[in-house]
Every structure is written in C-alpha cells, then in structure tokens.
Image (cartoon, rainbow, N blue to C red):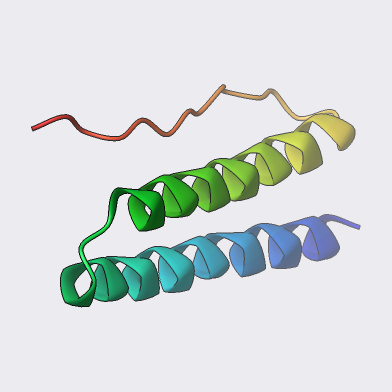
Length: 71
C-alpha cells in the first residue's frame, strides 16, 4: 500500500517537472500570458492531487500552493 502511494507521488512529481519545463520552454518561444496562466493552473492541480493522496492515506498534509512570481 505504501509502495503504491510512493509511486503515485513520484509520478505526480515528475509530471509536474515535465509539464513545467515544457511550458517554460514554450513560453520562451511564444511569450503569452495565457500560457503562463495555464501552466500555473496545471501545476496547482498536480500539487492539489498530491495533497489529496497524502490526506487519503492519513498522512499529515502540509498545504502547498503555487503562486506566480511577479516581476
């Protein structure tokens, strides 16, 4: 059971890394605000999913949020 949770968390983590790096590359090529907003929404959904997984296993959940840096 614990291996399954660890596997899901790792898959979620690497998905966040791949999606964020891909969107970062695309936003350099095509600089648009909508791309950045979409990336932030995707990353936030992945983080929420991981938090939900931890909570469903009875683990102590630290709330993580993703905020776009201004500047």
